[in-house]
Length: 385
Image (cartoon, rainbow, N blue to C red):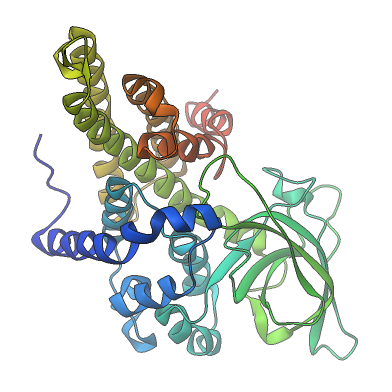
């Protein structure tokens, strides 16, 4: 079916991104995979391209586009090329919404120009060694100094995307004890300069997938954070985090669709070229049926993604809607990519083939941003159950 969610401007942007990936990413991507990280120079190039400034208001050096569709185009093209852009996606999709909605004018003037240029890369630090989905259980703490000029931050975080290369980290911490009847109170977000004394980057975590996207442990020992770096109001972080979950799940939903569609592309190309028993793998009925099933499922996800993009831009995408999208899209991606890998035979298990990387990269999408089980809980609650 013809997609109507994108305009000519989006498609022109798509071609720009496709050309950029072919020139600046694809030739060196295998080396980045081996290194387990992309060069920081890539972020400067993405800044020059204007990618980081799409949604940033013009007064801070951005384009001021209030739509997620351009970011969706980037997700689709990155998956199509079988590559990654390190933590660039987390920089724009996870950190930026918090800075734009809850940052003060002074903070935006201070950080946005560097954010847009790629000179200041950001990360958000929520997860702790003993706290995953239960954000109310966060133990990292920050105590306000007696003179009220700064906080002293202590604690540890883990699974932090972009944690190795970040220049500014949005740290979710406890600034006051939680009352027994509401554990969600007392959490705040502090924007921490990674050059601060007492700030430590721990291990670069070795993952089974997303290997060109650095993920790290962080530790804070009496890190001095100026009160000017408090994002929004003290004690309001839980509400802030909840506010952005809809976008985070939209991102995961678009990503699931993009990777599943890319898997079909890789598998279709492979089965046409690979010969077994004297004829192309594509000639066998099983191959045709498997890819037909995959294409049908992915088109169903595409319709859901496009509706979600329209609803999100209109401010109408609900928490339950986002949960349905994330659940369906990521589960379909898991099934489709598994089937497409199977069509590659033994070669599908080799990392030199993009289908193998998609297989391991996609698995975490059913965990981060809220697991599939949590999505089902949200949907069931919306049904009144």
